[in-house]
Image (cartoon, rainbow, N blue to C red; front, top):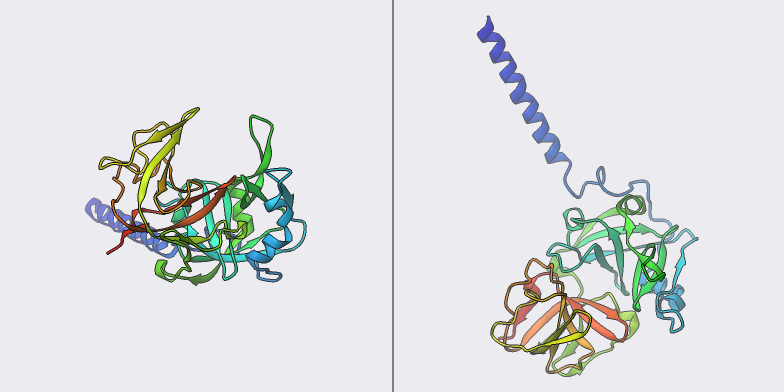
Length: 294
């Protein structure tokens, strides 16, 4: 009798585990039952460029570097995720892009890539969020005041974010995402503030010296031992022979590929184009974004 009871208990345990595994299979990371707000329906959606035009003064002001404004209307935007935090080079931030433009969304959360992989289209309810610029780069977020008393649009809590977005159900593969050409060698296309946030490419460029900041700007020579950003006291910028020093490859010292060596020779570089004051930073998502030119 005891043996039968033990067998019954064992069978129940296996059945329980099987049920749990089935539940985990159903609730995938992209499931709207876990992430996002399924009550959001597309009603008054504008393009990202229309959003930038509407808040043009806040995004490109010269009188207040970190300008912002609260969205009080029932407005929405949608776009495909073109960059996330999968390799740690983008920190608590994603970029989305539609057929007109792109913008960054600041979220105080790690592991965003787990439920917002590249190519996922999302719809964002903007009412109650802020549109503004950080060092002239356009962002969506909530307000933050730093130790110097400067207030700007920055990372919203993950709880706030969860109330303001939903999945559309559409996806693109990485190769299907639109990539805008910003330069081919020394030939450049438009570098207007409206381009900030786009997924772009610099073709046929080569690295030269770099720099990092530790209270003062420190120069770094480019040689066979040069890494993306390992061994320095801060994030590292690498410049190009074909472009002015206002354009740079910017790498976080916390990126998973920080210790990997930079490629020599001509390369094509894909990444998010971020504006930082009068500079342009290209932020790669992983090392596959840098490909040698055959």
